[in-house]
Amino acid sequence: MTQQATAPVVRRVDARHRYEILVGGERAGLTAYRDRDGRRVFFHTEIDDAYAGQGLAAILVQQALTDVRASGMRIVPVCPYVAKFLKKHDEFADITDPVTPEVLQWLDGVLGR
Ligand SMILES: CC(C)(COP(=O)(O)OP(=O)(O)OC[C@H]1O[C@@H](n2cnc3c(N)ncnc32)[C@H](O)[C@@H]1OP(=O)(O)O)[C@@H](O)C(=O)NCCC(=O)NCCS
Image (cartoon, rainbow, N blue to C red; front, side):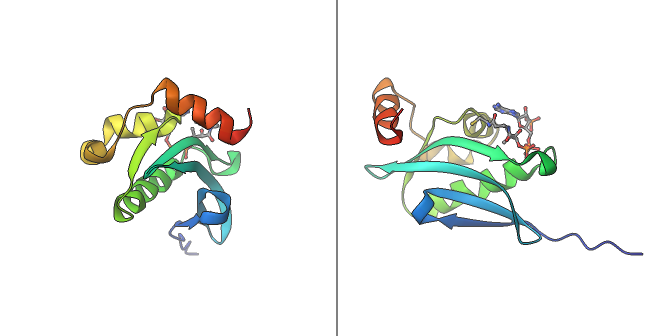
């Protein structure tokens, strides 16, 4: 018996301000953002328990950040996972901006928290 692995697919869902990763057509996780002044502020990443530990978060974030670059925008990594990813992948350093108290305050307002 052969098992055919299905390559994960990452898509941007503008209406929900997030990128989703699909495995076999099923949503396995997401990374959420809000945009501000040409910056995409990533604040939360999650992979469903059923898909954990397979490197899906890395695929999702890699493709999301590549899309940010293609859009001519910059990255602000509030999400700890995205921040950690960026420490290991310096190819995005030129389009990454620091997380400031002002951005955090703005984000709290946007998210109503
Ligand atoms: C964090 C999470 C998205 C990782 O998903 P995953 O597909 O299992 O992750 P991967 O297999 O691609 O990578 C695992 C890496 O995530 C890191 N990680 C796990 N939890 C983390 C967290 N809370 N913050 C930052 N990094 C985390 C691990 O240290 C590991 O790093 P390594 O690759 O350097 O060893 C997933 O565990 C999750 O949904 N957790 C609950 C929500 C959460 O804590 N999100 C992060 C902060 S918003």
